[in-house]
Image 1 (cartoon, rainbow, N blue to C red):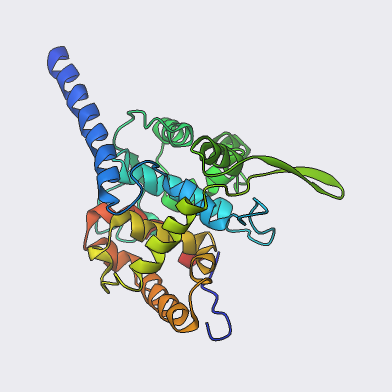
Image 2: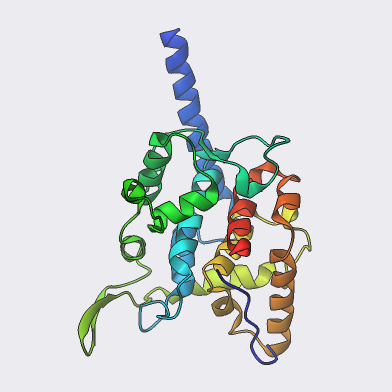
Length: 285
């Protein structure tokens, strides 16, 4: 769906106890996600979808590029990765018949609420779906790209606007109306530029000063965000502000990372399987 673009040079009691333990385990996973983001802002916690949209928004105009037809699918991929990192879903076990990430189905691991409406809505769909679907199928279903009229119910609507409203509530965006000759459009200019710059710096440093040349030594959420920025065709936005030499280095290292074989990398760490599965979907397109 997208490619890296280079610029010129650049028993009941027991069951209840188990449920409580499961809920506590899910809460612990959510807390650990926050703790993983060392060096990040301690006041504002963003989901992967919010970070991707923030990267794609034009700061002053408050909307994404009209030419970007990848971000909708990328945001749905972000929802799946976010749910996996929070311990709510997982891929079915690797078998001799199902070795490829694209062939393995998404399974419900826990239906405990995440507190995020989009995540919980997706979780509800996954729980209610039999037989289970693959990662690619879920991205298509959640985006509404299906020929099956009975599966249109799985489409998540107004995703960009709902994510933008979350960012408005967190004090990062504001809401305005802009006139585009024939129609009015709601836009969301960036008001908290510090938060966006923090996000840009985190990704830039991950492939420059903090480059480890091994995706399995990277912070999982940073790895996920690089994959999603690529899948959503907004990675160029991250590196454009860099000087030419740093831009070239960042783009080349990102390309090396994103050109890795997802099926091979997923076997090295099960905790990152969903990240590699989403990359496999977009690299296939």
